[in-house]
Length: 158
Image 1 (cartoon, one colour):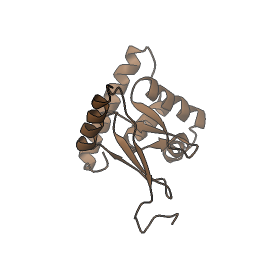
Image 2: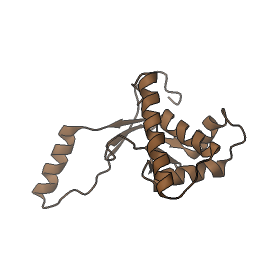
Image 3: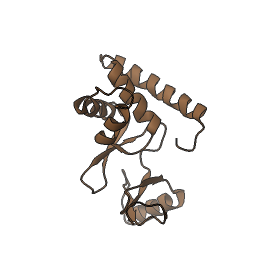
């Protein structure tokens, strides 16, 4: 969503929230002001985010929100199919918002600044499928994580 205009992003977040509230209602769960803010910010930020990073963000709006509330909300988002926990080998779980995107997308991770770029390459996916078929396999899921050094001159850890 990062390349969308503010209006487009607002619309996507509103759709995500509506879908989330419907799912909550179906599960017999209640909505709270704190949970609403956490979920809204999670979708608005639209990036791989740790519980600590999300907590820091939501405290700008509601300073009294606690870590446990953020963590439970991320767990709920995961259980309801709105987020996928990811471990990129740095000891921190990050949550990937997956609403309106291919859950099989791949990742390019900077080993210095930990910046994460999502990508989906049809040619690569076709090649993987061809290899699997030639070896007598059918792909159920894939996970490609490329660890590299970004070429950003502003990278804080170079």
